[in-house]
Image (cartoon, rainbow, N blue to C red; front, side, top):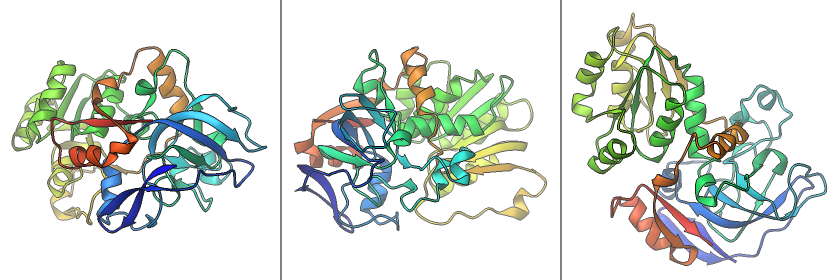
Length: 344
């Protein structure tokens, strides 16, 4: 089968690999119908994910059809359409029982697919702990609608949940990339008084303005002034940082009112520094990533009810054989790309 493979630092290549087989009674084999490219894949390519294993098939955003299940898989069967969770989790350890599935103590716990074990930019994938890692897609929900459930939409849902957004709040979301937009969609479900989105890229600003006209959109250089103007208490009540730069990290705490919640969702390519003397007295509450992706069933239900729609994010589609062209467009932000669907 074709598989897009991490060959070396800075090098991904489309290769031939054997079709995966069941290795554990809790495994399932999924025939991939659609996958996508994530910025985290680029982080692997450029060496920013130390745990990534050379030789693995990359990709962790995918949907497909169950091809085969191990003897102990109970929740799905052959022929079911499913989303695949970005995280592998056993469901039984202390962290899983408390909803902290990103910290599952299993040897493959956390982000494994497309990082430490073979992922989904291919034709077939083996999913460990299938009962936890797969969610059945309702018949009325298309592959396109479900594509981001297991990763960036799960991230946005988790970020909005842990940020404790109230209806009286002014919420600032820094970054309007795909994960930022998914976070915006999930924050909107909380019905806050105002949402401000800060984004440096003009294409992305225009995307937000077009699709979510009630959201205030601002450039980074005007962010702090706008937040202070639109907020009642000297800054945003909730700040969610999804951009992942040194500037956006500093802007997050600077834009927050005293005693606000600052949720860090972004993945950085170097350590960030909190200037604690400058922050003294703001009494901020920081919450940090990564995602605990255990609400995929709830997200699918919201999609089925037409309360979440991420299909506008899919701006391009390519067959698997042309995935290198898709990566070129996505990595270089060509042709007004937001997200790319790889179709099998």
